[in-house]
Length: 222
Image 1 (cartoon, rainbow, N blue to C red):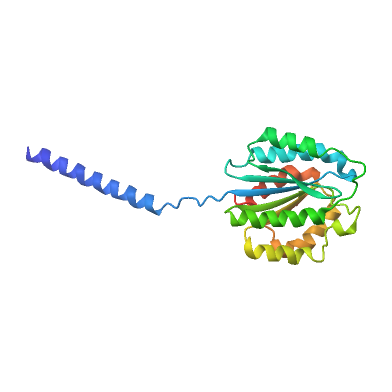
Image 2: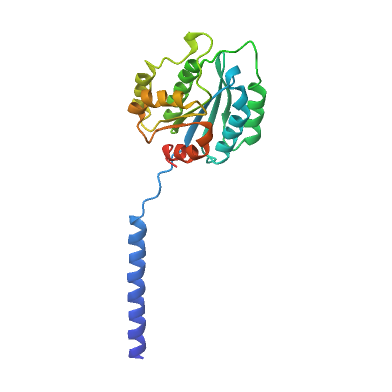
């Protein structure tokens, strides 16, 4: 009987030690600090970008399907003007497709590219989403050609300073420029690289856009 009690006592002692080790180990494991993302797309629907538009729309749809249900998406179109055509969950694939098909149709009279207006609105959305607990990313899709009224175009002399100001309130903001010519993208890198850094600025031509997607997710913190 005494030997049996000794064995039981040893088993209880070992179990207690193991349980304590498990508890201490669990306490030392840090739970991931998940933060939802707000992906803000600017897509060029002007005349010069029409040939690549269908591919770009498919890219946006695919990008959204891989996002988390807690994330949010905003899509703005850029032509003679820039305006919001979709906002909501990235999982609403049907709504995203319908919105893009409806509001990206070519209008021969609207041949300008108001990237500057679109970028200003995108930054305003980024600040708003930051205040609501989201990590913003601005993804510009198009050829970055300057067409139409110069007042609507991006002022590349002032944009870096504007992005820097936004970073004061959105330190985790990232940006991507996709589907443009290498010369345009190199210029973007020159202007915004010093502000955003390598980790928060992604550029890519159409030929390498599939490789750029994981880098965008990494910039978003995923």
